Length: 443
Ligand SMILES: [Zn+2]
Image (cartoon, rainbow, N blue to C red; front, side, top):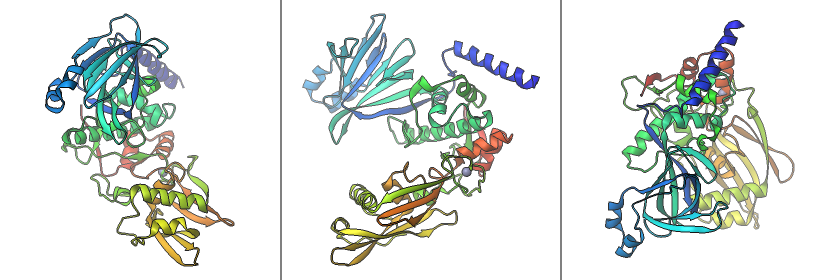
């Protein structure tokens, strides 16, 4: 008891000591580039004594007309007012970033400055607030062309250890046991490090998205002493197939596997290094998503399939039959008569979902979909996984009963939580969910 108490007091005082320094950052950890806004007409930026700098003016000469060059006149600007200033940034024309300083209420424009984009924004205080969320270090505003015209994209460049500190409470919870948190921080660092190497190699201007596409990140506002200590304890540790490998694995993780983890090739159609075994996991039974029911009306199902196929193209994996060429018209004019999982794999995931339809003339036809595609079309948070069966419950009402939450690849967060509570160490939890890997130091 005493030992536990003194350990927690030490942890607490260590936490306080760390708070007095600015962050987990030390020399040596690389920066990760996290895309925090993916195309916005205008971006509200706030901070103390903000500094704006146009980062590669040379490019503008090559790309843009002379009128634009004279418009994008300022290489840099320091807003030295010794107080908070508010800006609205927009990207009105190719390559140009317009920064409009506004009054504190954000309404009255005070001055307009034009830069050749991209523009780096930072503050001597170390934080910049973007669209209401606070980020450490620097943000870059990139003018990009989207289907809506020119928009701004915002990327936070931040020490990867500070990024992990902010990530813990967005992706899982710092209130979980220490070994489970450490295991997840190592998995998240490995995932980020993989993306950093991949996107640098591809010449991209960002490494990761701040959404469920990659890892959910809300900047520094969710940091706390427990997440910070976890980042410090596991500093630089990543998962590799062998310690001498240059690349880490792409350490996928998910909420709840529902009983068995899955291989990447089943979910995304591509084999990935470091994933050659499924793992039987009886440890995520306490997850609120271990078993679930989703009721769906025939109309909802029809609409989801029609919209999904219209926006992304009809189901195209080799495992399914080709759709009739007239599918769009057929779907609009027919009613759903049957929905079932027509093929499932060894771990119980739906490989093929078959829907049968009857049109006004009484003619029936079938549309097959890969399970992962069907899940995505219904909505990945609604249909929580592809481990499900279809129960027909009453007229026009279908109930999908399933297990687990997420793609099922790699670490199962709720399973890791239980293993940590049972006294397993972080390295043991990682060896369990990523049996083909070892822990290596990347920095
Ligand atoms: Zn599990």
